Length: 154
Image (cartoon, rainbow, N blue to C red; front, side, top):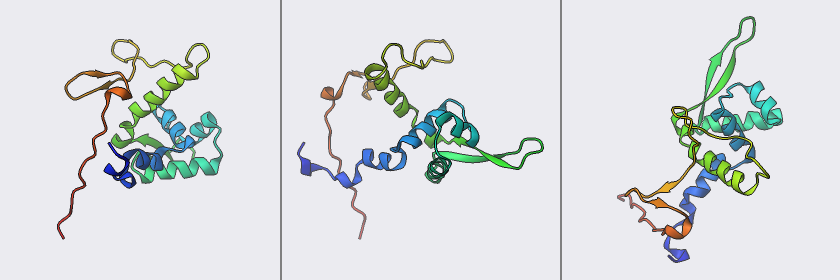
């Protein structure tokens, strides 16, 4: 494949990074997958500056990755929780892939967190498979194929 054979301005990797590629956004998603929903809990767990966390949450809501749900504790003012949308849940494999890479290349001894299948307790790991069911062990087994850009009728 030559460099000129596909339109990099439409790259899905770049588009995804524009939405979730900032450190705090990914860490907010990590916390959401761990079940953390409230601003104060997110701020405590992450140590993120309030303004930064507010901005990242607003972006994730605007992009349809999180949704705001109102709640009100007894005697307290109304607040919002942040819950993953189906679009947000689709990012789970991305975070698992980042976690696996970190466990392999950055964890000094034992990885700090394990993922287990809720039904049977077996470890969970991410793997690539083609649509025919073959396991793909790495980038050398994948061939990029440019796709034609649909032309809208003029």
